[in-house]
Image (cartoon, rainbow, N blue to C red; front, side):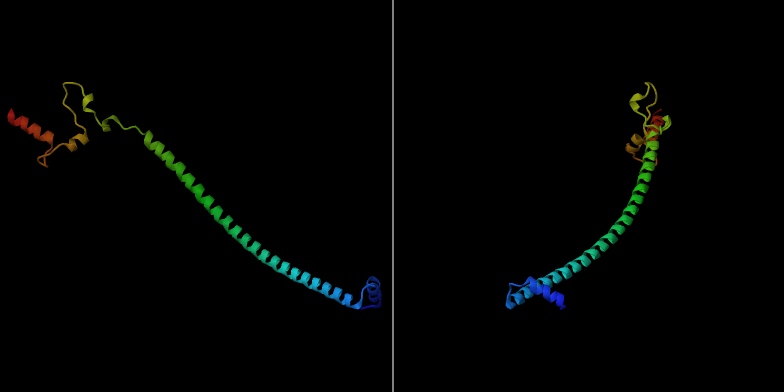
Length: 145
């Protein structure tokens, strides 16, 4: 201690006994130690928070990269969906020629030979797999005549 500090201390503590001065100095040292401990704790917490921030920044960068990849996939899927919708619209807009349409037997004019649709012909009972029912009828008509 310098002489000036010693004189200042004595002047400031003029009314205290030496024992009271020792107690006050001990209290101040304990407060200084507590403040030092708090400073070390805050410094440690600061370091931990910086490490957590750096980790979160890395995760954010990774998520940003993943998000851009997902956006590219979504854009490709949307383009494919537009193409599929256009294809579907084209397929449903195509008109079937009259020769390929199913024929309704009720729409046939009277006095003509009834026309069976392919589905109705396939559903009829066939006794001889080599002949269709209309072929069997034609042979029966020839036999009867």
